[in-house]
Length: 489
Image 1 (cartoon, rainbow, N blue to C red):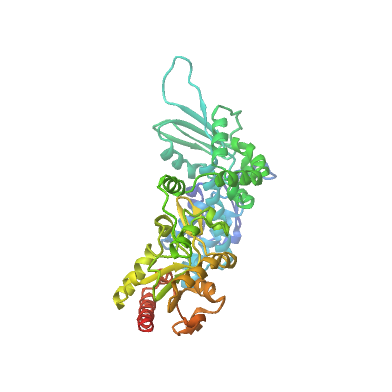
Image 2: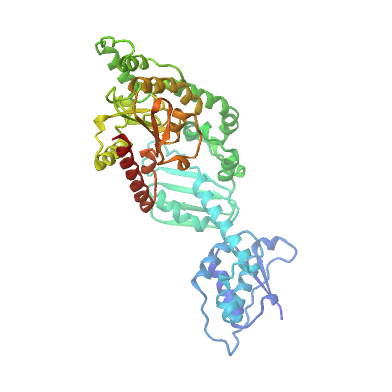
């Protein structure tokens, strides 16, 4: 015998569960049950009176996993007419499918019924999320001379029967006002005491008020043309919702003008003062002028380097960070470029890498005051990010431009030993673009009887994330410093 059963089909778990339980207790296989909804009443057959079969005498009490109930609650809100038959088929399989294909059916992610039910549940979840995001309330004015709670009304067009499912969210979110949400799939209302829902379809009201302009102003202010991704935007805000959102009128124009607005933003950013830069420059301008150093000395070279414009890095840097140390030092250390703190202090190796350098040479017995310490590039190259200045590696052209100063320092200081810390320093001193590891730790003969020793830059040690490897590399750097001490003796 075949059974035909009619439901309202508006996302109510109880009406389907009661019928499904009766068919299951009677042992009716899924193929003998035809599920119909009130949408079918306008069709050829109309609604029939429902008849449920009596339970089978051998039927035992049954339970279903809570996960199935949660899935059924979501799937029954879907608008697909096959959802009732799908859920009853899954329920029947769980009761009669044995241990593997029965109670554990939901764990079989590749099962066709499980896949179909999961897709429906996810679709309902997305519809729920969109409704919480895209409902726009319009305020209904109170009668003149009356006082009371503010009243709001809205219109939304969901894909599925989710009004009763999502109504508690709006009750929690807007509990201090009266509101009514109308949709083609039912309505929900709240008056401060009672939350009411109905599955009767509503007609779209004519809704306009001054908050439309407020929404447009807000959306225009948060729109960032530099981060525009049209595909992602239409995924998060599908076009089917646009007709009921006042701010979406602005979107075509905002997209069309995005490129021009990005260029305008970049132009404005370039004219803004850099952090600390202008204040230090102003203080330097007020400082009394130093007496001119004797020509051909390291002091004169340092004064000349203050006005260096050989490359574009000087435009961003606060000041030139020249070498520091005795003019007749036996050992010259060469790093890459000054960092953020060196740029502000005007001295090399005073930041975190400089502190690590000081600690290590102190451990092995090298006095920093005996060293001449400089960098391959004399200006700080960085990229502004908010309030931070992020280090940017100088390119080969910038290193070559700044090599003129390094060569002058070598000729005036005449160190016996030159230590290159990092690949940039090695390139500046030798024009070699060799792997650092291939030349590290072995003395290399240079012109004029000098010796070159290659090691890593201390900032490299600070960036190693693994503590064990950092300790190994630090020990190796310490051993390099011991060898430098012996070579300089």
